[in-house]
Length: 448
Image (cartoon, rainbow, N blue to C red; front, side, top):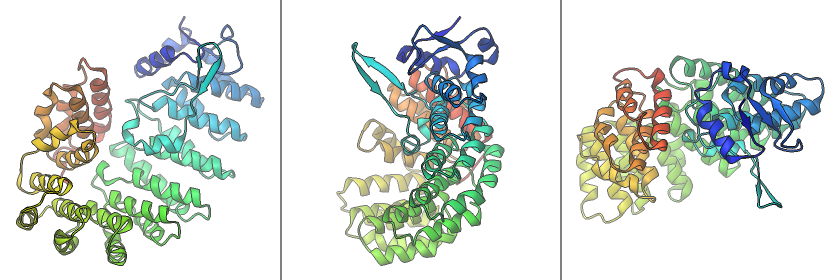
């Protein structure tokens, strides 16, 4: 009989790694849960009993069951927990949302542990933090659609705090489905997310704008975002809250929403410099529409290294090789590292230039995130260019390459990723499993 000790990091880690492959039959064989809070370690609860208690008429029983299942994040509990995400008690809803997140996070959160014999350390599972950590915060466990539907429904809860927590959790987990499942999710979510982006509640409005960027991220497919969703985000560009305005720019870039070109261009000219000007231009650069090429070319002469680098990125994503001459001219005599790095990316995208410097930068804490984003763009339709780096001696590089290929949406990446699933390094193997999951719905020969 398998047992998880109260708050045991070792037990939780075992549950996280083995849980991905565990089947229901092993639960019937006798998994036992011990309470994370008030139940003594000797008091153990069978998995089936905890699941049954989720439907209890007594709120105390439901809360106890959810708390147990949060501490022991078995994938088999995900669908039963979805029902109590919509519980009438706020406290139970918060626990259920946290439990759902903990099941799918790559690094399981230990809700409670003892330091020595006296001090207790509690770690909160916060949906916004999980969302902000990005898609790579998830492990390699598929997210059932029932869980996503429950979380999206709970986002309309009468308690705004519950609604915001559920919405961020939905956004965090909604990055997992791919292919046909993702298209169904997008179609089902469009009207609700659009409405929430116009909510009178500022926190819910901000969450909706950000979550739209995750659910409709153009890196997941080549299909254009629903116009109602994209237009709702354009409207959010006028928000009085500076952070929501900034989030709207970021989301339009992720959606590659061409109908946002005029508004973003006007905002860039209005602000001219500073954070919001850079954010507007960055959104245009991520969209990479040919209509923005004249603007990008003009900004190659900017005295701001950030603006100049973003302009090069925009030209790189425009897909017009003829723009490489202007980029080379702007690089002449350039000493700023960020600008030179952007020029390397542009060369790789527009003229098949070397990606060696980009892959080398995966070892640099300062440049790693930018390098990974550049490599994701390159990998779309060009997964084979990264295949040899799966043999890199550094496990961190191999894991990053697996993650990059997972976002390529290119079926050609599947065999490359498969070669890493049996890697001796656990983090590399996890990254490869996660990438394989994301590539399930990939189409062969996908292009940017």
